[in-house]
Image 1 (tube, rainbow, N blue to C red):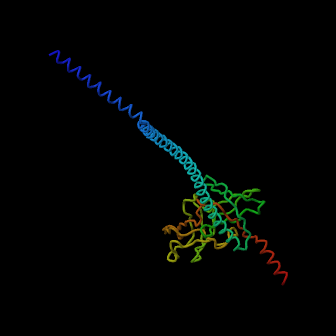
Image 2 (cartoon, helix red, strand yellow):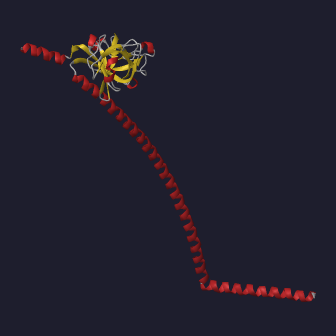
Length: 298
């Protein structure tokens, strides 16, 4: 048995040697004919081409990635710039809207000032008194601007003219106004439609209605909610027929011969910024010159 195994091993070695010799002969023949060199070139070309393609693909990928990152950075910067421009544009829009509204308010006041013959002085509110018992409004005009004590103060809001109050104290460059809602303020007033006369008094706060007294009970049938109350023009402190407010409530008191009437101010004091100070005794310079010229012609 052992001899048989040795013979088999020797036979396999001989076969392997024969195969190697045949392969070597084939290689030698190929080398001598030059065909094997061509194969090496093809293989080398294929290998290098594949490597170059891979390198090119990686290079392009890196370039594209870098380019994309650069573009992204540029777009991000442009986005920030556009965002800032948008903010500036929105701010300009808000500012322009505010300016237009401001111009509209000033135009309203100018229109009213030009429509009357009395001397008018436009002013801005710069502060307000905090004590309701002594409510005051401070404006930025004083004696140097022609402001005098007891001049009436008006405002134009939404095309509506209304009484704000009257000047109670005058400084060189500022003045103090007592508003209609002050408890110290009393104004002679009429119901616009019926011409019934009474007195308007304040109740100490801009959030509380004004009170109107001394309107007789017998005229209650002629009064209606929303009726306009205007200044009577008596006593010389206020121009005549300037709106004060509208009737919001009428109460009949058994113990009083007069009605208790609540009046909502026509001026919205919480939004009040600009006022017009009006003299009830002085005329505009142009109107005064016109009157003098007419008298001279006579």
